[in-house]
Amino acid sequence: MSMFCALRLFLLSRSITLLLLCIICCSTSEISTHENEKVMSKESHFHVMKGSSLLKDALFDCSSTAASSSSTTSMQGAQSDKSSMKIVHRQHHCSNSHQLNQNEENIPKSDGKILENYLLQDQIRVNYIQSKFSKSENNSEYFPSRKDSKVSSIPAKSGIPLSIGNYYVNVGFGTPKKDLSLIFDTGSDFTWIQCKPCVVSCHEQEQPVFDPSESKTYSNISCNSSECAQLRSATSITPKCSSPSTCVYGIQYGDQSYSVGYFGSETITLTSRDVIPNFRFGCGQNNRGLFGKTAGLLGLGRDRLSLISQTAKKYRQVFSYCLPSSVSSTGYLKLGNDKRDKISSTKFTPLLTNSKDPSFYFLDMTSITVGGTKLAIPASVFASSGTIIDSGTVISRLPSSAYAALRSSFRSFMSQYPLTTPTRLLDTCYNLTSYDVVSVPKIILNFRGGVDLDVNFYGLLVGPIDQICLAFAGNQDDTDVAILGNRQQQTIKVIYNVAGKKLGFIPGGCSS
Image (tube, rainbow, N blue to C red; front, side):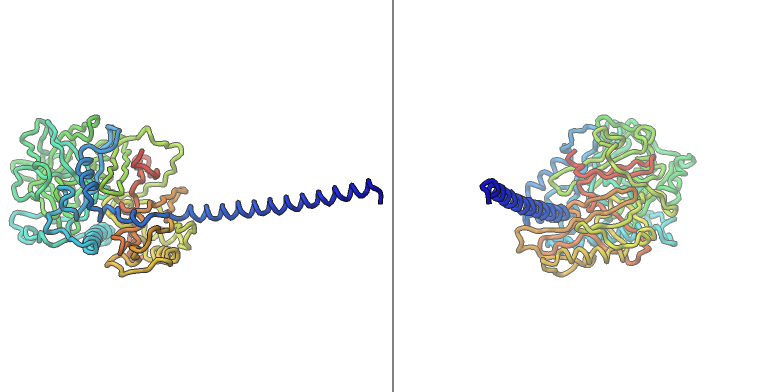
């Protein structure tokens, strides 16, 4: 063999060796990249949290930092937007954390009892909402009076307060304005506050009871007016007349709590930039039930007497809110379009109406995704029940078969953690006291229009760390209305365009 041929063979063998090395290295790199992508993909479908983070639940965090922050931010807030009302979490059980809590003797002390009491209150509200879509109505003509012994003897220690919401805002009433703390509720239409002289009864509240005689802008509404006639649709109770001719309203809730008083008109101040004249509301003279120490309720439903409808000309029936996930932070309630929102990139799902009670906000939930896998739930399951989004219900309720699928998938992903005793309502609970880091599958609620609600970590679980539970519950039947509760809405900006009949979600809304 010539030297030239030998050289060619040497160079050829060397090239083949280099080629093989390149193939091996490139393949290894591709395999490594692929594996990394798989790991990253897997991690993107889970919340990985430190065990200490599980202790910061708004229900059970009674630390002095959280408590003092809650009390301070209720008036000051963290929002720089002066056209937003501050939303604060109303902590039920920390008797010293904020004055809006129930009386100390009525507050359970242990975490287990706190959770049970909390869930019991929530179930009362759910029963009330679902009863509205049943065939029978038992409160249409109920009008408590001074002589109504059944009403006046509502037990203060029943432990069953009206769970009409866990968040409140401060609203100014009258001229000069008096700031009052009101529970805000998308499931109610009518706004009422307690008023002097409290002819029959007023519950204890944080601020002084509003005195309409000290306001330059208050007036009673006549019982012969068209405004008085509107009360029936907003309260489900026919209004009455008081001498000489003042319109009298009455409204009753699911646990027999109620408010009765004069129907009036007043100037309200939402923010320094938002002053609403001639706002129609209830000036309560007979109010019974455990409403905490709030002054009343702010109705955000769709009826003509709701805040949203009465301010339609100014705000075009658009409002938004973000609910904080802890007592140490504040959210906000805003009326009108927010210029900071990137509406062009926000997906909206239709806002639907149910003829049985058109004031509720219905959505079309289509499916549920757990840990990156869409559950095999027929769309007909969600269609048969319908879904309400509600700021007052805490734990989301799902059709029974949909919840069964969610529970099965969630338990499978959480199989490395020990199950513990369930609560009366929640059946998937864990004891995580021995874990420094916890990996929880993400749950995404899917709605018509390609809209996804990626539930925040604190919206997935509820309870103390030794009995922390999946924060969803099943209805008794697939036909019972499903409810998207406030636990699953936390830290999400929820935009209601009522006039446009659409609703959108923006993640991380409380920090915007």
